[in-house]
Each structure stands twice: as structure tokens, then as C-alpha cells.
Length: 355
Image 1 (cartoon, rainbow, N blue to C red):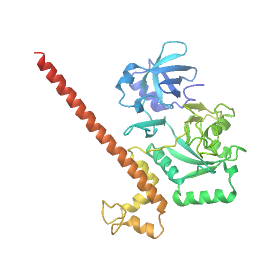
Image 2 (image 1 turned 180 degrees about the horizontal axis):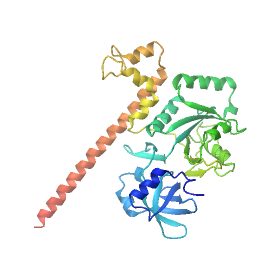
Image 3 (image 1 turned 90 degrees about the horizontal axis):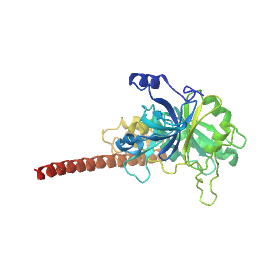
Image 4 (image 1 turned 180 degrees about the vertical axis):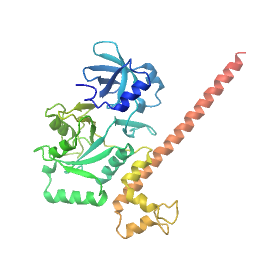
């Protein structure tokens, strides 16, 4: 295997040359285990850690390496290395960090296409799908929905689900899949291109790892089912991992995600809810909230059935989620600035007291 097989691009090669980084080893992060990484150079794999400087200069965990990253490193043993620098990212798939307000968690990087997996039996949820679409569009990543486990539902249930999907999200590509008979797998294989990077995202227990096992034609990843008692997926994948398929496509498995808060990129919401945004430009007032204002083009479209009420409600929820995130970031910056000013004044006073 070579770096080209791992997805090396001309842009990365030029960046290394232009920044005089050719003396370092180049690799791609293929596994992430908290703050330890596996980095592949194509020919070899190395257990790697980041430098102390990179660790302490990072403003948040989002500035640490993630699966999919290209990095330069110093190799100091047959299988050990130190990561010196993360190279510029083509795309970053991210969400709000759970329990850490105002911070982002990177799911994976340098992705071309994301397969969003939802199982037809008890996980299919268009509101949640629109959140996935928003984070994909925010990163300029093409989303493709995979409706899995269709063997567990009747033809009528599948038709009703796809009909609802086409009403709410007309432009979303979708594939019907059953890992049991592998129906739909050929459609996914037709999409996968050599040296392009794909990721698989979704809740636990929807068939992400089973799909990757089928693509690899090996049972490499542990698999689990959705609990019948809690109706929630059992957490099986505990880390992120990158694989190169036989056809040259590159795919990343990710842990199941129950919480999916959007970040501060408004473009993702605009793309997901393009119809609502286009209508809002026709509202009588530029600051229209689309609630009960006169001359509101969005309310008019809702009343005449042009847009779906559930989609509009979800738009409001996701927009509110994003606004809270943005407000938290502003407040955090204010606190950091105030603390920095206090520290600076303390150092001045301490210096005066010494003389």
C-alpha cells in the first residue's frame, strides 16, 4: 500500500513542499484511542502521540488529530512516532461536544461523502436525519442516506417511510439496504471511488459495522443489535477507524451518536432547509421570525401546504440549538478575555511591588 492508496492529494504534496516539511515522515491517522493514534505511511503503521507543544497550544480537543487527518511526524522506533503537525483539513465533520458547552467534537476529517445509516425498524427519524444533513452540509460533505434492515419491515412500511422522506427532503439520495441478504450493497459499491474517503455515521445498532464488514468481506468489526427493551442501539464501536477497501475506496467507521448538536456554521442549515430560507427572503420584514407576522412568506407557504409543518418545526429547533451554541461561544470568549486581562494586571502589579 502507498500514500496514494490512503488518499494523498496534490494539495497535501504541495503544502509539504511549500512549507519545507519534506524532512518529516508523512502519514494518515487510521485509528484514534483517546489521545493515542495509529498512523499509516502506506508501508508501515506507527503508534503515535502528539508533541507537548501541540498538546499545550491547542485551544480545544478539536485541534487534536482525528481519524482521517494527514500529519507529519518524527519516527523514533520501529513502530513508534511523535506527531509534529496536523496538515490543513479538506473537510471537518463535527458536532457539539457532549457536556462541554461551546466546544466542538470532531467526528472525522478529510471526508468526501458521508453515509448516514438509519434502520427502518425503529430508528428511522427524519428530524434526526435533518440534523445529520446539517452537519454534513456545514462541512461541504455529500450526504447519502442508507435505510437499513429493510428485511424487518413490510413493503408498505418502507413505502410510507420513503414517501415521508421525499416530502420533507426531496434532494436527498437514499439507498435501501439489508445486511442480511446484502440487497443494496452493490449500489453502495458503485458509489465508492478509489482514493476517495467516506464515513459511516448513525446511531448504535443500525448496522454501520455490519455494513463495513460486508464491504471488507471480513468480520473485522464487532456488531450489535438494537435493544428490544430500551429501543436503543447497543454501543459496539468504541473508537474511529479507517479502512482501505479492495476497490480502493477509503471508509471510516465511527461510534454511534445519540446526541447531535449542530455547531456555528449557518450554511449547513441553509442547505438543509433551502426552501424555507428562500421563502424567508420574500417576507415583508427582513427580521421576520415566521411566527405570526403579517406578510410572512413562510407562514403563507405553510398555510397553503407548500412546506411541511414538521420540517418547519425542526428548522426552528435546530436554529435555536445553533443560536445557543453561538451565544455560549461569545460568553466563553468574554470570560477568557476578562481572565487574560486580570492575569495581565496581576503581573503588572506584582512587578511594581518588587521595585
